[in-house]
Image (cartoon, rainbow, N blue to C red; front, side, top):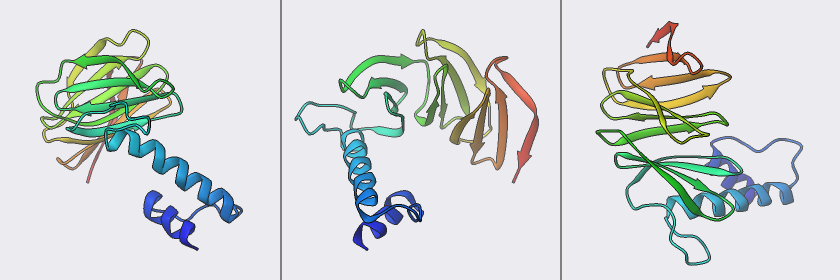
Length: 169
């Protein structure tokens, strides 16, 4: 169906096999509306959100974290309001990730910054990779980063240090 093809295009996978067409349509429409507000920089209510140079974005049901140039911005979904601009990168932010406790942002020079989600303050800046950080993922108390240098590294967010395992591709 059309909605199944749109789901494939949007998420890169087929919808769950037990979902009916109505559920697939709802998921696609909701995701398209939510993402469009941030990626296009405009909310349906004609209020302005996002920035033209947004290069990285991560969202959940309550917050959006975006990388805009050398800044990381934290937004609230419900109000479409920016609650804080986090400054500290010296080059363009290439990826962002967050959970209830931490925000991680990587940049094109290979630096990883860890921020407190509660205080919205920088906790640590680490030269994580030799090339741009392409992605970050939070898993339990770990931040996992990948880079164009061909490595994947594991960072302990509670200790703010690298874990012993480094994978080279």
